[in-house]
Amino acid sequence: MAMQKGSVEKAVPHTRITDQDDITETYMYDVDWENMLGKGSFGTVHAAVHRESGEHWAIKTVNKEKAGSSAIKLLEREVTILKRVKHENIIRLNEVFETAQKMYLVMELCDGGELADVLKEKKYYSEADTKVIIQKLASAIAYLHKNDIVHRDIKLENILLSTNPHNANDHLHIKVTDFGLSVVISGAGHDNMMQDFCGTPMYMAPEIIDNKTYSKQCDVWAMGVIMYTVMCGHAPFMSKDEDSLYEMIKKGKIDYSDEVWEGASAESKNCIESMLKIDPAHRKTASEVMDHPWITGEEQLAHPGNVLEMMRQWQDLRISENPSDLDECELNGDISDTNRQDSPDSKEVKTPTDRKGSAGNKKPGSGGKSKTSSATKTTACAGAKTGAAKATTKPNSVHVRHTGTTNNKQKTQKK
Image (cartoon, rainbow, N blue to C red):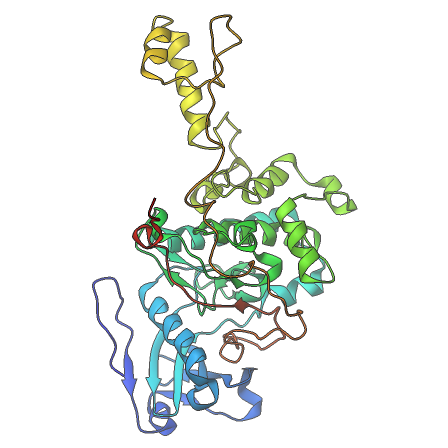
């Protein structure tokens, strides 16, 4: 299968070969158990060394016949996206080899393992170390979103630790991996909202659970879950069954009662809360998280949480500087009823409360909840998700159906 070239894709070779022996011409590659870094249902990961450069890589082998068509589609989607991206905190795809039965992905070697495993050993990270992790993660997610890529399965198991080639003392050099559930959208707006019920339950945003259309802000919610988990050692929302877990997520109540939070700064908690806003419109974007005072170290300035607040602040400033503008604002309808004081001449203005669009459209079908338990639920692309460094049992990712993005024309109802 030849590589599809495009203006946005980097030059990642995709070579059709007869058998695995052709790979050994370029890489010193032994498939014995000693060199195996990870293993899944229908995939393995082995260490390899490039013969010319001496660089160390990880070769992920996927048996296409065992994987089946659905898993292969996820794998091909992952390859397509990895060919497009280039960021120091995103796993690098070096090249692809393919036979009739197997696909070989030569990927960046992450010898530090999964962040989830390291966290289990450490119990929790210090606030300073958490800041480094979140700054790098936010940078990677902001880069993806800028390029219209939504990951949709951000979790500790999909963050690997690697050696920083520019700083040997950097032990928190993270790499975002596993793009099997990721999608490429064509920009912002309602036509590019997603409907798939997918991801890992513990990291799912409320809008996904509520069976609503959702945007790239679902990645920011998952990032908030990760920050909380890294700082205290457990997730903000935990339950024995998925139904009660989903209810906790939809309420969004964050608990800081553990002793570990006693020494945490107010700025760190504010950063978590800014990512775990129930309403995605009020949730900070990944780029805004990078500019959060907790990340930058700068003093917090009064900053509006959304566009409506920004407009109200601008109106207040405009009127304070020039009181004569008050009449003009009211004439043009610039001042909402909520901003007008209880004037004897003011009349009650009723506004519609039903939200439409991104938060109001229900998906067709029954609820959004998975009726199967965590133990019996089918994992999407479980075999292909072997990671680039080591294999562990991951929290299951769910992908009930793929319906793409919404379309206003298709949803227009005749009156």
